[in-house]
Amino acid sequence: MSECTPRVNAPYLEQFSHQTVRILGKVRQLRGEQATIDAGGNIQVHLNRDAHLQLNHAVEIIGKVQNDLSVKVMASTDMGPEANIDFNAVDAVVDATHRYAQIFYEKEQ
Image (cartoon, rainbow, N blue to C red):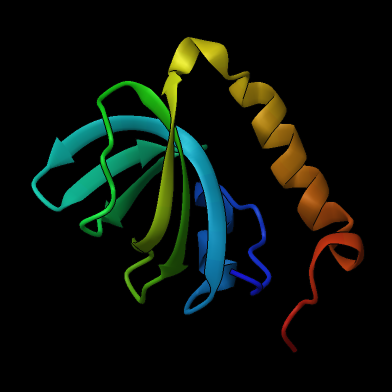
């Protein structure tokens, strides 16, 4: 995927409606083709057939933000048990990404 995929968490979703984003979070609930991940707040994701998520694992999602602020998954990577990821550091990276947006992505006008 050559498209720009800014890192976001739940508080930033509204700013990226209809755009492709990258999210790192913890899988909190699985329900068929949907899941809830915790990334600075709960995010509903609509899984594709290639997504094989496991409960309480860290996951990186690349997907498109929908009108209802859910995310349609385009690609996902299971990162393993959440204890291996420092989510405070992840949140700090997300915040820095948006504080210094000109370095990481072009903001839509």
